Length: 166
Image (cartoon, rainbow, N blue to C red; front, side, top):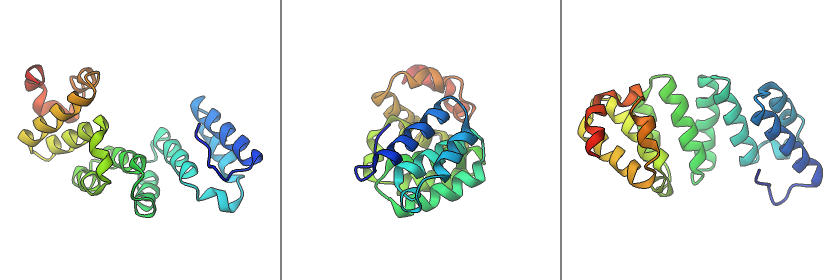
């Protein structure tokens, strides 16, 4: 777990506890620990990222979109906010907003396989099959392991047959 450089030992300990609870699937306990942080630390991006992870794990898509969208505006260079918010938008079947968010993200996102994978999913759902093929090819260039996931992802059904050629 990364630490905020300005955190004191008590805050670091609480963050480690919250992360531990999250990893164990004890999401409400993790959330409670985060609620117990000092007000000035609750708005730290690492805290917000963990809250976003918790909301995603709880499948609270609307709440994740609300928190993530605000975080993308506040910290426009942190890739994780864009990827996590995109996940929630895709779960809500709002593929156009998900794609728009990805495309508006920091340039560093384009170095991540997850960016290209999610973009391909959105493009497929929006009927942009040729673009989706290019995006999934970019994804596989960065991480070949995602090929197996793609073979079973219903968001990519429109390009399943072409995955063998990529």
